[in-house]
Image 1 (cartoon, rainbow, N blue to C red):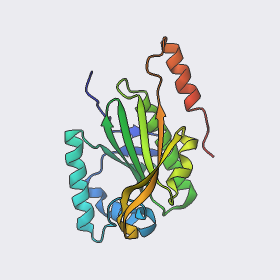
Image 2 (tube, one colour; image 1 turned 30 degrees about the vertical axis):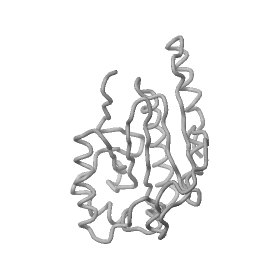
Image 3 (cartoon, one colour; image 1 turned 180 degrees about the vertical axis):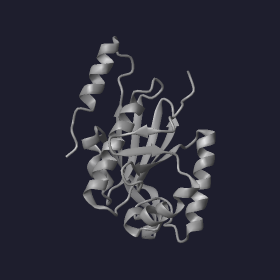
Length: 204
């Protein structure tokens, strides 16, 4: 099996997905990591200082080099603002992803982030080594509401699955969502038809 290679740059109509850089620290701190609403259900603590965010970016760059955990910031192509982040743990034949969308900026920002995520997922599930893509979402958060619109199926409720340090909880429940690609479609046309059908739902 060939090695999994993640592209450094991915574009949607409005956003550019690229690896985080030290110059992003202030924006990431202001827009996401220091914002209580944005990080409420994350598994790591809200950043208290800019140094926390710089340390996170340093770790993210090392994870890119190793290929263990690629991360992309979502940059608005018109304004240059950072609106979110995607992280990926590729473990063929499966891949887990996580998303942070800034709660600052309103519905348009969240819509643009969902559009970019939809393109990202379409690329990911089409990779030859990947047959299953999954994500876990806090049951009392907001992320799970978009999962079925993105083509995912709810598989389970996981009890006491992840820590919720920003809520002071040692463990919290999560929903497990997944999409799976047919293992061995008999014809390339069948695979393309499956992709078209799977991603045919438009986001409102």
